[in-house]
Image 1 (cartoon, rainbow, N blue to C red):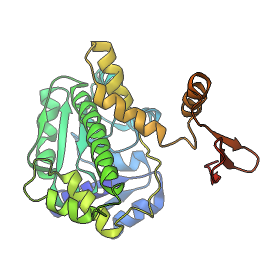
Image 2: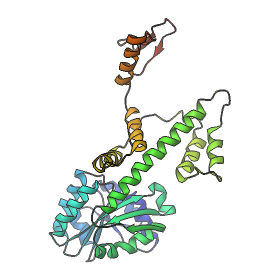
Image 3: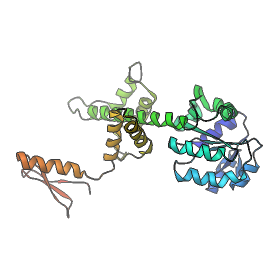
Image 4: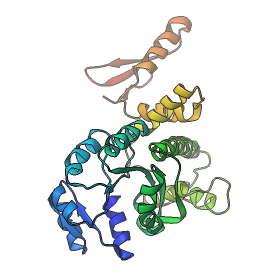
Length: 309
């Protein structure tokens, strides 16, 4: 997403310098007319003080590594922006560490995906008003109209983005389950792409996510080329954990997070346990598996089927 943000800034007349740990990616940006740097020191040297350094890297240790690498080259009054999905408590800690060195730190939750270059992004910022004012001209150019704001002190931006992502989990799961119901109705043979197309025209559940569903189903009407393992997880976990800490119920988000975990299992031991217990107390049918051959054999003697290993 950082690449597309840089290209949007360049198109609006901003002078931008870029650095990436992969030199090939820096060269690609230079081919697009962007000033490239091949070390963090070189990057800082290409920027006029007071500088704004925007990080777009994965949350966690990578952010701290980048800060450890670049902070020694920065000057008092420079602003560092973390535009990734960092845990808000980490952002509070990092802001305090940089403040002790005379530097400003903004946590800016970024939404909009790859389409943000064309449609504009949504930014949720946390930090000192002075630092926000220095970065606001950039936010205004990058964002969709009205799609940015300062939500409070350090950590507030990533807190709002965390909750945003938790809501996203539940929305995605709802769309997924709904379309699965449509797909599993053989008596009607519902056209899933047509359904998404119609729902996007005036229905109460129309959304950008549903527009993306329409695009995906146009390419592959039954999603036969798409695997069912769903990645991600950190922001959903943080949202649920924060709900526990606050004693604020988040049942929909919790369910969506658990459903995502389930997609990563080749088979469910919990499912096996439930099947075994039903067989024990009620004599209900179970599927007996020949683990060596990878074949599931129904206990009632019907046809065997292959199972995921």
